[in-house]
Image (cartoon, rainbow, N blue to C red; front, side, top):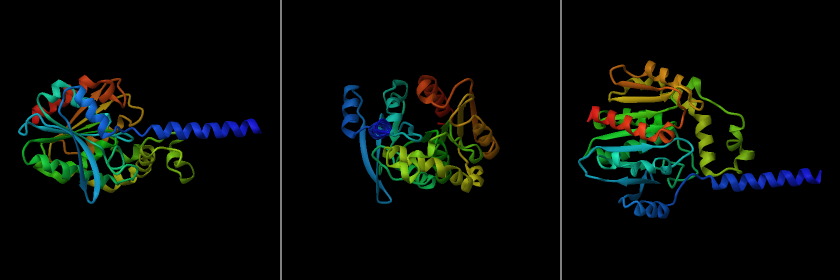
Length: 283
């Protein structure tokens, strides 16, 4: 009995330390040091939207060049796409922005925000740069529907959007054993703020998607849906959902054979080439 109790306490302590460390964010100071070492001039910007603070990374090559805004999934932060800023095939030809979504990174960390409000923040940020350059929105996973929702709000004020392995289909939301541990009140305290927000998003996501399902056909600017056929986290059937709900005239799709959910990171160079090709088609 004593051994069992010690084991339980030990496991609890391990989970607290392990998940507490997995906040998936990088401090402004660390970002500044990282980019200084890479000899890339990147601004770490803190701004407000509806009285809440958010943060984003901003690399500006030339104000008149197209601006690409990257939106991470869940959990995640600007750390997810910060490496894209260092890629010369991007930073030599585009202005680049990588956002900490609300609840993650250093954007009101640990506090859940609905899909619609996330889209509102992104739309507001995009408008700031759309006044002087063409803007493209790029979202991975849960960032995909946020990008598409923002694009509807923005209309022709942006040039196009890219969704990479987006979770779009409310009838095919994937759930996993133990996934509710970071959601249930009795156990969520064990997990870091990023994991708690991620769980809150996960278990509200299908209902949020259903509430806006009839709006997708309102999107009027070019949209690119990229999806791996072997995606185990966000099933490939989500591409069929996009085909059924977005206008044929604006939707382009790319089926990535035998690839999974993390293609922006496991297949970074090819992903960047796909992004550049889409942007060049719609500049």
